[in-house]
Image 1 (cartoon, rainbow, N blue to C red):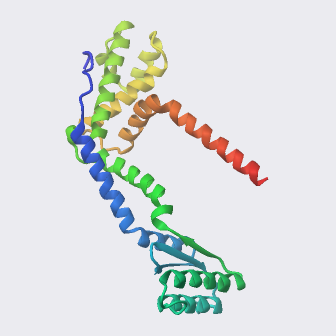
Image 2: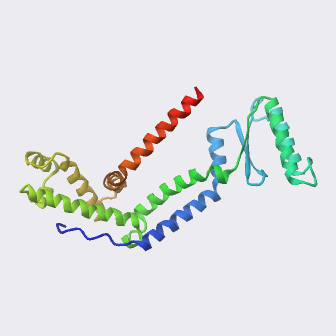
Image 3: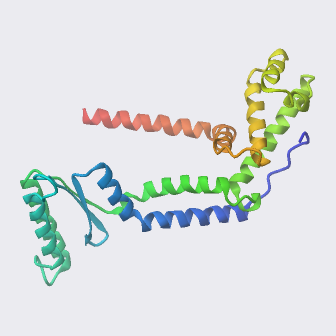
Length: 265
């Protein structure tokens, strides 16, 4: 393709599909967050226990210790007794809010008196940013391979648009330097690189040509390497369009980190 690239068309159906996939993934993460967090705690923090059926909309995480084998410690048994009192509304039969409040106070006292740790977290609030981040990544990976139609896939539409833009720029550069791009691109890799380096083209063109040929094979279905579209999209779309924003976020995050460390010091 050596003509002038067409003006990008609106891809409203693709955006709708992307938002739909993102919503489904996000809903799935919220629906399974109990299982995911519980499995994570059991795998990486075996000395902690997660309770999700005590307080409405709030989880309880308590530390535990083992007195040999899997036998519960006295602290664990005391905490379980408090949890049972909360479930049976032993602290206040008439006022559920007071029952939860006094139960929390008793839990804190029982835990801290025996050197334990206790956390109260609201999962829908605490895990919301993490769910958004994970849902965005999963949506990106899903769109990378499904649906294949560019009209219903904004990611593939964007990759195709960047591929066409890079194609136009390469043809233009090679023509300006007196070279036939199709002839050079058909050469073996070593000869192609030598031909470019011996010309008046800048050295960076070597990398651009290799990226172009890789994404071309992927678009034509000749390559199933999953890293090719990811690398191409981030290098020629994200980095070129949002490099200043990314650098600003990194610098701002480093500044906030330094500020917080300074306050702690």
